Every structure is written in C-alpha cells, then in structure tokens.
Image 1: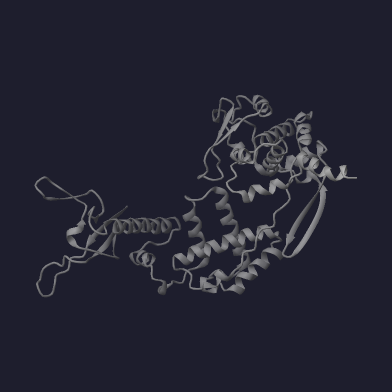
Image 2 (image 1 turned 30 degrees about the vertical axis):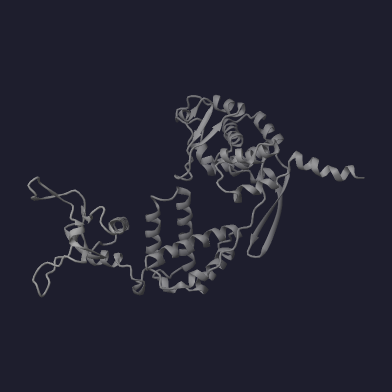
Length: 428
C-alpha cells in the first residue's frame, strides 16, 4: 500500500511567533509499507494560494478524507506551473517505487530519497547490469514486443562482451571500452554491419537513459559514433513466381498450408505477426481491419482483400483455433518456406551483399534459399509498384510511415523502366 500527499511546511517566525505564510516550502509525503518519506519538492508557494485537498463540511470543519493530494489553487499566479511539477513528482515517485518492486530492490526511505534527487553534481555509482534491467522493466509498458526483444538482445550481447566484469559501473564505460564492444560484435559475435549499428544505437539509448537519471558520470558515450545502415537489396517474388507458387499442386498438407499463408501475406502486404493474429471477425465486407501488433501506437490499417486472398481464407473457414489461417511459429514457417521454394523451383540467382566492418562479402544463391516471411511485404510492394499503384496508396496498406524505408523499393525494375531504357535500342 502507498499513499501520496503534499503539505506546506509549518514553521514559525522567530520574531513574531506566527506561522510563516509567505513563500512556504512544499513537501511530499509518501507513505508506503508502514514507512513515511518526507521530501522537499524544491517548490514554494504563499499559504493563501494553497489548497490542501482535505474535504470540508458545510460548517467548514476539516475532514480526514482527501479530494486530491494537495495543489496550488486554480487561477492563482503560477498555479499551472506548480501543479504540473507536482504531477511530475507523483509520476516519478510511482515509477521509482514500482520499478524497485519489480526488480526486488529493498525499498527504504533512503533509497527513495536518493532516487528522487536530481542534482547533476551528485551522480551516483550504479551497477550497469542492474540499471539495464531497470531500463527494460520501465520500457515494458511503453514499447512494442519487438523493441523489447532488441533491448534484451543488446543487454545479452553486452553481458557476454563484459565477461567476468559483473560489477561494472557507468564510470567504467569510457570510449575505448565502448569502441571495443563494436569490434566484439563484428569479430566474435559475427554480426553484420546493420546488426552492429542496431545494437550500438540501443546501447547508446540505454546509457542516455541512465545519464538522465544521474547514474552515469562518464560522458564518453556521447563520442561513440553511430554509422549509417547499409541499405540491403530488395528480395521478392516476381508476379510470375508468385502466381506459379499460388497454383502449385502440393501433396503434403503442411507445405500446402505454409504456401497459402505465405501467398496471403504477398497479396495483402502485412507482417507475419499480424497474419498470425488475424481472426474472421477482423474482416468486415471483405476488408481486413488490421490493428498492427508490432507497435501499440500504430493506427489500424484497412486492407481490401483481393480474390486471391479471399480464396485462401475460404479454404480455412471455422478453424478450431479461432484464427483465420493455419498458423505455426515464424521460425518453423521460415524453415518450411525454403522447402517450399525448392519444390516450386524458385531458383532465380540472387546476389547477397553483407558487410562486416569495412569488408564486403558477396554471395550468389538460388532465391528459394532466402525465402522467409519478410519477403511477403517486399513482394506485395514490389509487384504493386510494377502494376502502377500509387506509392501513397501502397503506404496506406503497408503502414510505412516514412519515405526512408519505402523509397528503396523505387529502385525495383518495372515494365515502365524497361520500356524507358528501350529508347537506346531504337537509337541504333
């Protein structure tokens, strides 16, 4: 149990003996688990501008019940700013308490007092891994599951890099130590350039978060450079390959279902996670109202379903699972897709470029070897562009928010581009 109130300091003037009523300090009262923290908020107010929040009878008698925790009276000078800061203190003490509770940190009056302090000159020594866990717990209610996985993956790699240095503190994170982490990700963890960039961005965001909480006395993290990502080539199924796969006669039920789910993704442009969440009630008048689960902030997408997509859905009416399609794990789906691609002889050679540090690695393989659920959206966008669909319309279907991610599709070869280059042939 916890309870939050604010009160004015009761201190008498040494000369008059009367309570001081001008420019009075405002204190926080935080009662928890039978303990009480009194904390000076750093705010002051005249007593006649203060509303203590206590309920009063018609006769003016003060009740023990509170209407609110205490605040500046409305329409008085500076009330809006003071109340805004009091609300921020309430949010902060609640966050500190709940985070400590989740991390099983002993909650004492001294602990809460130290956490509330916001004096940059009094930065505290904190274990990096304890803080990283706190960071992840705090973000659980704010970020999507995929983002949380990125945080956890970054933490795990950083712990492996640090090895036996379990008592690492933020003052240990100098630029040399952080730069060596980048080298570790490339050489020992065997990650490509873009993956390394992702982890370094996440680590830097975490240290910035710690710095904002006065955990970090070492400013070297600001010197850590984040390189730009290398834009990978767009790998997708051509319309001819997609229709061939859609019409392919398949004996095995599992591969047949994998084919149907994959093609459904290629015809709708949605992520596998959203397809896995699709239920019949999400479809109204042949329109899929998709509230993407990748980001809880995303607006619903309205996807008119083509005849191809509707035909696939018809095959799986009334599934016992309550889902619209037969769903397996993403990992298993990707394994079966390679078998499916090989069966369908989708063996167009594709060249993959990977970067490890400054080194470029080039590999040419048949397309079926890299078939995954990620190809579904790429196939939809690439074919929609080739058919002349407006980019703004495609983005409304796929949920792309920025041009940065979408514009790389514009390099895909379309019939219009082939015809445009034909002017050179005619110039013979």
